[in-house]
Image 1 (cartoon, rainbow, N blue to C red):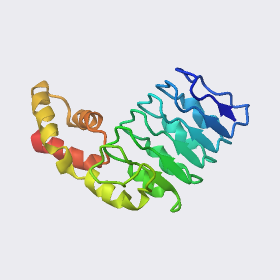
Image 2 (cartoon, rainbow, N blue to C red):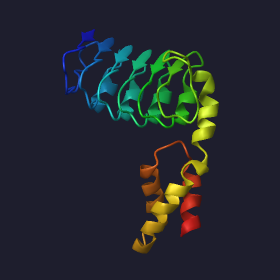
Image 3 (cartoon, helix red, strand yellow):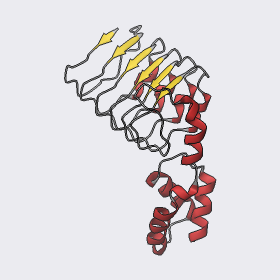
Length: 198
């Protein structure tokens, strides 16, 4: 077990894959990133990164096949990697108090018994009364609210109209929209929006 809490740790160096780590306690530090090599810790069962300064998580976190508990609460995350849906051993996912306006559709692939704690994010759906209210049952409602094209239509039209004079190819405009509005809206709906303006 690695216990590095309250130590003002600012950088997490790539972990040694030769160490059979099963539990990493790195909460309450100043971490701003997690190295992609974290995905090589195949025996890791618990990863606690809450109360840091994380703005993103590497997609390789989805390679942690033994992971049962992931806590990334109280950070500055604006999105979660879709690879989280690959975590078939996961029993609890704590993402409270971040800046998440949407959740990846892949979370629906987590085991049915997995609990998801998401209160304190700017989600379009109220997800519970306390930080530890399980939001799992609300996933369909959250997905429906965050996959609606109406959610981005107005600001997307402003961006697309401003870029129109640059003669940017439509496929690139879809990528620009996807970067400007990271959410669960399918790419084909964003394509329809681009073609409506072009």
